[in-house]
Length: 288
Image (cartoon, rainbow, N blue to C red):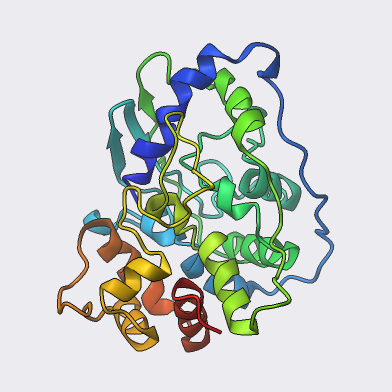
């Protein structure tokens, strides 16, 4: 997860150089229905499904829940995942639902401007309106932690946000998830999770020289390994093995995932329901 930043922010030098008239632009995005009744309990589950804890909690140092992640070092400087507790000063306690929705699905900051693509809004853009509403409700219930998570420390020109508008205009197309009517309910649920909240492609897909996810080879390997159906079959995976690994077990080669994937497993996938685990396995292996 942390290495995602290294790949994702490589876009900035080129984006800054070509900003021009695109500086303040954001791609058009679907209108959101934020009047839905929130289910904070389901939102708590989405916190785990979306990998929020792995980045926004300093697990290694036993930091407070969602109060800010450990520094993430990259060739462009240091990023720090922010405090997303309900604290109004240091967290997101004073955000409106509309501001939260725009941040998650459009990469727009409440105070104006754009977020770095280290926040995987490329993937969160596909979240359903209900999931956005539920996630916001859950986060507003997280106990406030009056603690600054620290500031990004990026070298010039990466410290300048104005080029992000150009990058988003060129490479970011916010679209909600559309189910494939020709596939099973499980396959479609897995597609939604993998390509949306779990944002697996952020680490497991190749990126172009400007850091945009390459749409021609989704999940075919990037920072993380190739997890296309063909690659997984060659490694000996079936649905049972896939679920075994995501639940914290061993791989078909009797190895244990390490590094960033170990953190994803311990703080995210082990908390998923059996139904969602099976759905993700079905999608990754392309089985109905």
